[in-house]
Structure formats: C-alpha cells, structure tokens
Length: 59
Image (tube, rainbow, N blue to C red):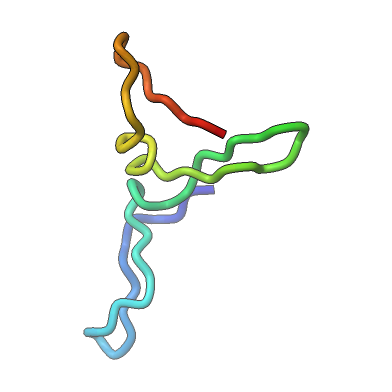
C-alpha cells in the first residue's frame, strides 16, 4: 500500500514523516514467500545499470 504524498509535521515546523512516493518502500522482493528486500522508487532508480540499461539488484 502506498500512502499519500504529504509530509507530516508536528507543531507546523518539525517534519516527522515524509511519505513522498519516491521514498516509500513500496516494492517488495520475495524469496520463498518471504520479503528479502523492500525498495523505494528512488532506491530502484539508484541501482547500477548493466550494459543493456537494466537495473542490477544483488541479493
């Protein structure tokens, strides 16, 4: 589940949560039905590329 993209502030100026979609760990990598990695869109974007332009994720 991806929550809305609004940051949460206490007393109007202390940020306590940042739910921007690119930072929410919405992609779960499973192995044998168990989550082994949780990735955000930002983390996927930052993965290294192979020569064909695919992202490389080592588990």
